Picture 1 (cartoon, rainbow over the protein chains, first blue to last red):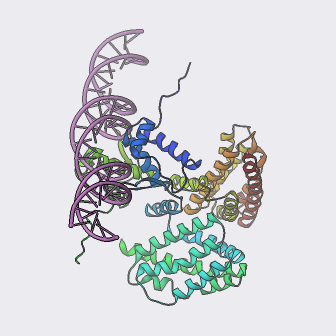
Picture 2 (tube, protein in one colour):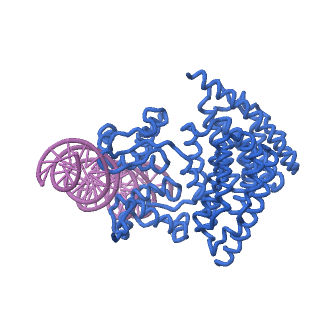
Picture 3 (cartoon, chains in turn purple, blue, brown, orange):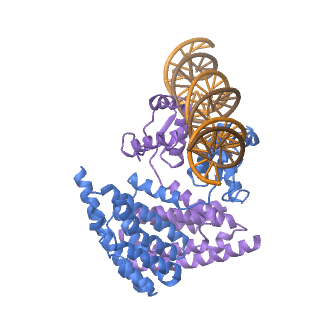
Length: 242
Length: 242
DNA sequence: AGATTTAATTGGTCTAATAATTAACAAAAA
DNA sequence: TTTTTGTTAATTATTAGACCAATTAAATCT
């Protein structure tokens, strides 16, 4: 029997989105560039403005563009970053598809390797940033948000210093998840208890002295300690909530 | 001067989306449940149908709901899966934010650990699946798509068998990225060359004999070998394209 | 020159209508 | 009976057209 191709399978907005995405990926539009206005795009694609808007929403939701209101506003191509990956991880945790012990197991595997690579590839800029971050940690008492900010910064710097963007993306997600958990628990300055001041010092010192094995081992210790604290607290938080 | 709070900062659709997402996460709507129709939601939220539709698009784009057309259609809560995480990784690769050597470095770290955990936690079901997958690999010659499907299946099974959903999510992303790269190169049955039949045998045998260290080491060898092939081919592909 | 108003552009939102898709059921035909 | 073909109803998909809101640049006024 003769078979026919279906006339159209996907939504119109999907086809518009696919074409726009392709033209961004292939470099027709580069980060910073402005796409034609919604009305122009609707004209060019020969679809309604709403179809165009839904396509733009998709690109916005996946991090490819952002929109600004007003004259000299419009839809602008953004330089894709790790934010949307991180959001996907956080959503999975919120939907109970990833547990705290599983997160900790990943941190114990990945973070020592990041520290090892950072020690191997360290440059002056990152050395300076690490020293500053370590000092900042030991200075002030802060709000929960500030405290989290300061205590995660060492990890961010190491992730950037390790020279592997994949590791960096993953570490950012690990940090975002950890922060989500701590903020969920967040009763009476808990973060100071599970992450006492000075916990990062051995790691940073090993990295600064460019000793990969020592850095990895120090980070492993840190990840295990902190991880165990996190697991225990989240466990008791869950049971207290029931 | 007295300052007032802005009445509304974000888009209406964002606020609708946030409320809907919250009610899904808190269990008001469970996977499989049908949300009220767009018109009803518009009525309840006191916003236009368009605002509701954009909110639903967002939830769709992040994997929380799916929509069906027609009578008995509507918006249905889906069981959040790893697809959207994987898409985020693939997008980062397509936008050149992650390179092939970086991907390989991650695989060399993570996959041995997955094999180790799989060997430790193996049950009968996964043992059977592994045997079947190994046999299927050595049977037929296929199209590129089928070939990729069959050769990645061992990795999927191991990821599921390892018992850590975070590792499973990451491994799925690693596979999706690898497939994207192979399909990009995809000239004249290349996959058979970079991934010859039988490459998985030592890994599977070690896992089946429940020897974690041997499994990890076998997988490490596999990841290194395959990874080096992938790096070389993608490199020559890039230079031939210029 | 500097402040203020106005106009123009663009995304944001709304209303109201029509089209397309699908399931269920009824009716007709084989 | 079985199979095919209409019919209907519910719901999303799509459109058109209008107006709102934000923003900047130009025009106007002081």
